[in-house]
Image 1 (cartoon, helix red, strand yellow):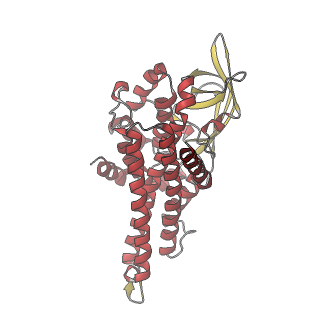
Image 2 (cartoon, one colour; image 1 turned 120 degrees about the vertical axis):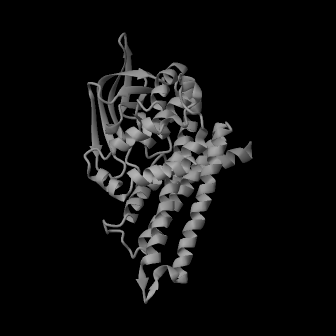
Image 3 (cartoon, rainbow, N blue to C red; image 1 turned 60 degrees about the vertical axis):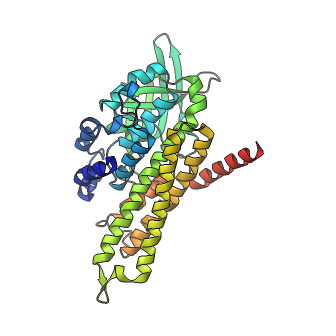
Length: 368
């Protein structure tokens, strides 16, 4: 029911014309749709526990929303706020920070974002950002790359190196604070804008619990990968639906293209791959809800992200080819999905790095 309601809403506000309008907009965001999603519809409250003002409906329900967001290439900071920002707060923040920030997210008053590095190690995002403390509190100085929708949210959660050998910490910074510069960069996927953030002695609030940061950051990474896979599932499903609709109308030699056996086989292969990915997303989401140990969840979600990458690329490529090779044709939507797949290929680890991570987990389990 939640998935159908989300699909109906996004059919009306995030169709092809709306997405293309956002691509042309300066910040690339549909602000009206985002206000309704965060406020009126309460999507930001779905995965947040009831103690912090949320609905506590779990990872599977949240994955259903990400699936529909990916299917419609939603141009709003839903992924940045929930899959990155709220996810980090729930897993590695201290109790005080959770109590201060999560209710605002659940009510739709606070939009969040955080870095989305290309490597499998989220802490790489702290490489060029230093934190220092004095009597006035914490201050940040340096640069952060690859922050999605940074120009569209009011708060950034940033990893920074701590003084001495104390590792890293997680800090909350208002995106409009003095000393913060957000530079949006043109990317391959125009439906999700990334930015570079420069900070010059910016006052910041430290929000992590040092113990949780060490032990639970892999869980936060796993949940973000689950969200990426759910978005990819929706995008792949849309590639199939666009294709079956096209080949049912397009005629050649007096027959609909879709009546040829070879075309039917290719569409069937897309469907099989999508259903396998759907089973993986639902299985990983259920695993996350059971509170299984972090290592097992991390391996499951790493494997899922790798499968999502393969499925997404396959379906987007098949959609382009079965539309008659329209990869460079602006008027058809398959190229938008293909570009999303190419961009997502580099989020929190490439498929090659993910498979190596899964293999290492299996070898450790066998040796134990």
